Amino acid sequence: MEKWRLIIDPPHGGVENMAVDEALLGSASADNAFRPTLRVYGWSEPSLSLGYLQKSAPFSGLGLPLVRRITGGRALLHDIEFTYSITAGAGSALYSQGIIPCYSVISRAIVLTLQEFGIEAVFSRPRSSTAYRKSGACFASSARYEVLVGDKKIAGSAQRRVKGGLLQHGSIIFGLNRALWSSVFGDIIVQKTATVLEFCAVEPESFQQVFVEKLSRELQVSFIPGTLTGPEEELKRRLEREKYSQKEWNEQPALRKGTHRPGAFTAVGGI
Image (tube, rainbow, N blue to C red; front, side):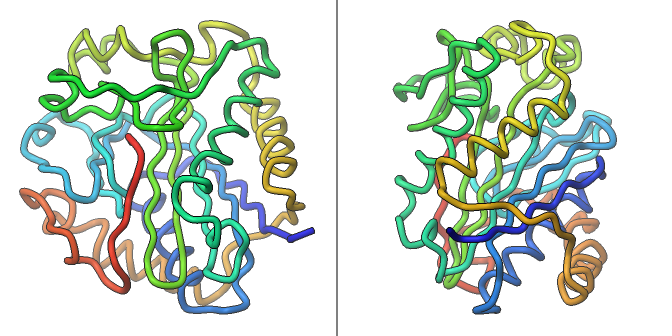
């Protein structure tokens, strides 16, 4: 059984959260001995993250911290949620499966976790809609293998692959500050979003435990608690300083495919 590292982080700001995840991806793509890693974390304050190729103008000036991800998709307001990242190198079984099988097995663990708490979660059947094409919000619509409750989206994910490694971001919405979400995305997006706490009063720690168990079973891996290595910490600090704290990265009009190296850009999902 493949052994994975499990990192349980306290809440951080967007700059640190995104720097940690990119540092893990950099380690995965450069180190053949990299141990695939599940990271579970939160946000120290309500924050907006933008997709890699997304225009920033509609979300500037809202008075919220804003950070650009290296994964694809659209804007998400991180607040009362369960956030995870999964990082794996080219030598891992998860990487070798390809994008869609990899994406679906992680989503299946999310569905099973929600079902464990009595929430009738299902995979989405994506639909093309004018509303989604016009919206910059992740929760305006669903990509293949994202997770719904009824016709409302409760979890979004996006995956990035570079030469030698992959990173998947995911957010499961626990609760919703409806006034704040409405001020950013509008009432329609609020109405399209489901939350865990609508259906059950579960503590985040209990949810986390079940999610780790379901992911372990679906991926057929075991988890070993761990932390960042010294080189990962060093890379994280450099990325915080030189990239994620910089307006040039976070608020540029839009990136183009191929402007971030190493490796080719590939992303799926709706975050």
